Image (cartoon, rainbow, N blue to C red; front, top):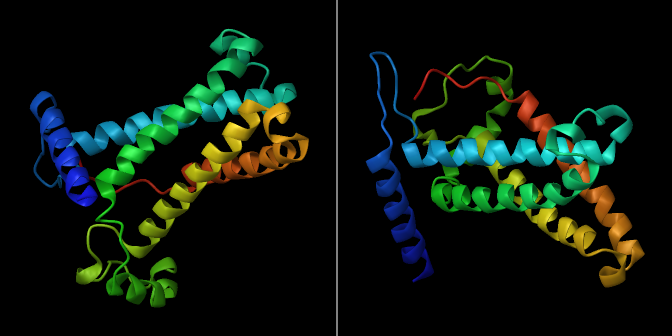
Length: 199
């Protein structure tokens, strides 16, 4: 029942975005993602970087003091950061619903993982035909980001509410986990290779 509701929501969202968006596919290009998926992707990216930069300004003000004036000063940066984080997780949740079926693990993914050495060394240039829309590496990255978002919400809520609600120890632990997770997201974004020519 819930699965059907999710599919109906996704179908309606895709139709709505396709009716207002426009996609032009030129010769030699491949339409890989529809308008709805691309809008979600760039919205997630926007709020991720807003949360990341405001977080850097709060975590390392000695290095990133130049960021706070962009957001209206230190106090406003501190106020905006959790809202940027919540928006990032919210829109990524829509992306999770959008990609959920495509990101489920299959036997083809297990075969892909067994062949990962040839893939990473470039010995095998193309994914096998049975790989599907996303390969196993992309799926693992996706689910790692999902786990990171869960950590963001839990640790961010504890930090936002403060020691008076959750205790000093919980807040201190949350700071460490939150920062490690954020650094992991930043590393992943910077390490992602450019995507092939596709609209």
